[in-house]
Length: 274
Image 1 (tube, helix red, strand yellow):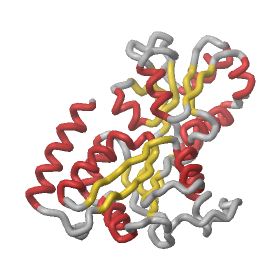
Image 2 (spheres, helix red, strand yellow):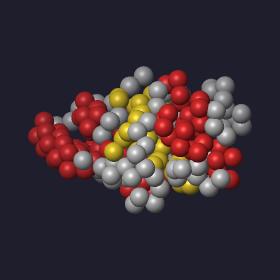
Image 3 (cartoon, helix red, strand yellow):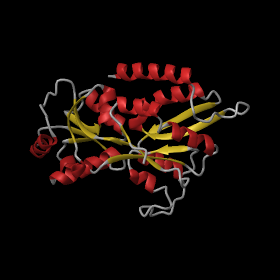
Image 4 (cartoon, helix red, strand yellow):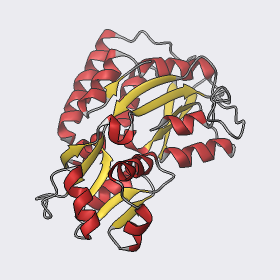
């Protein structure tokens, strides 16, 4: 799986370098360090895109901070330097957007006019190699959790993938507190930690993103419908605290290009650009 993305990256990089790029370049006399906070589930794709963008923008160095969207949001409001923010759910972006009805604290960090819905992902039920417990669907998982016969890894409640999991529990009428007390749940502080638990077969299954399952080479036995947990939308925006707003906007525009779309689609993201 990883080889597929690596091969695609090599081809896209060569094509981009040969054909040139339509995006603005940083002033050559003043190198720029662009700081991008992105959801942990974007680690592989954003790392690939960094190489492509920097290859045609020699004055720009992209510096990433990957973590759960909730942690990134907290760091931003606490004063961390950040030029571009990409969250794995609208909630964290809304909390930083003064125009959002969901912004209860009146935080104002989003540069108005820059926010877009960049990508859509899927919430996947993934299993370790061999699927030892034979879990084949969310329906089967719900029954196994109630019977206490399966160990599930999920994200914490402040992590988008954990919040989507809680919606799936609600869809099936499952009581998370009761499940946790019965010992059938383990937690991760971001989606990568949950993915690792599944990869290492420390659990019987895990609820992660389809893209993380792809990157880790895990088997996906089911994906959640919109009725179960809603759409998994990744909003992106330039922040009004950016020290390099023009270059930040250029990088965000690059993330909506055909080149970036190909990288995102290779691991299972669906570009939106809304």
